[in-house]
Image (cartoon, rainbow, N blue to C red):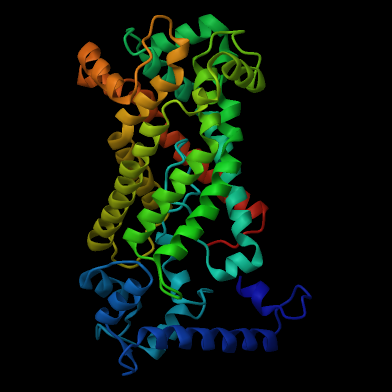
Amino acid sequence: KIFTTGDINKDGKLDFEEFMKYLKDHEKKMKLAFKSLDKNNDGKIEPSEIVQSLEMLGLSISEKQAELILQSIDSDGTMTVDWNEWRDYFLFNPVTDIEEIIRFWKHSTGIDIGDSLTIPDEFTEDEKKSGQWWRQLLAGGVAGAVSRTSTAPLDRLKVMMQVHGSKSMNIFGGFQQMVKEGRICSLWRGNGTNVIKIAPETAVKFWAYEQYKKLLTEEGQKIGTFERFISGSMAGATAQTFIYPVEVLKTRLAVAKTGQYSGIYGCAKKILKHEGFGAFYKGYVPNLLGIIPYAGIDLAVYELLKSHWLDNFAKDSVNPGVMVLLGCGALSSTCGQLASYPLALVRTRMQAQAMVEGAPRLNMVGLFRRIVSKEGKSGLYRGITPNFMKVLPAVGISYVVYENMKQTLGVAQK
């Protein structure tokens, strides 16, 4: 980034004049960043000023965490940072503003675990103008497609266990049954639909998130954690409303026997003919209700884990590194899934009720009662083991593909 910014005449070399110009321009930007933090204009940055500035950016930290941030920059041990310390620390770090300095702690949707209920990504004005935002969304979409395809057998097993809950089906037996019924390739049944819905869902969610943020915040005001949660939940609900029929098709195809449907189009045609348009929105209510606990707990646990890491492990740097961020993301989304799982199970049962012979057509409350009375409370968590088994590989694969795609598409590394 230093090289491409400094190489003004684009000759592939960085000469002394260009290097000096880069340093002067960068120093100006750093001075502006320093002044924006130095609230009382005394030429020093104190922990309270760090707390205040990050609060304006929608990031809440404690005074102790702010001291840890300053410690990593403070070279003379005064527990304040003057201009010289600030400049020396950031001179060869090509970040240009405070927002970028805290960007790596953002809860990124570059990580796809197959349940698209997380808070969408936010982009800076620069990224929107330069077109970096759509490259990042595209990179996330490709990462999601590869990740979902890699973990599709576990996803199909989860759906089978959710729908046929009354029958005793363990993981090994479930795989055996699926392979016996439709050979190895049947393990990926319904995956095409799961991949197809990534693009429209991401697009609608991103657009809706931007609109809800504008409604909930005043002009020029930064969005806080609560507003981010509300905007994200409403954007998730909007996107789900738009792509829900595809969700129903995915479940039907995953539960279907070999030859039952000729494909996505054949499945849609059959449902429309025999059950009417309303069948495409079966289970919509529990699905919508599940978004709130999922998004809320996912975000809350992520913020909690982030605070814990900053309090206890941030010694030399506030940059947590890839493994910590992936661990926080995987754990927070797992907690979110745990909270919303009974609603997800009821949704899947309602989507597939018409396919299960002898199954009564029940509404959400009726299904909850039936599951608890017939299978006990543990019946509400049927299929959760394969669901958890896919989280770590999904996060790992998604992250690797996402980073490689960002490099391929020329997205600047954050």
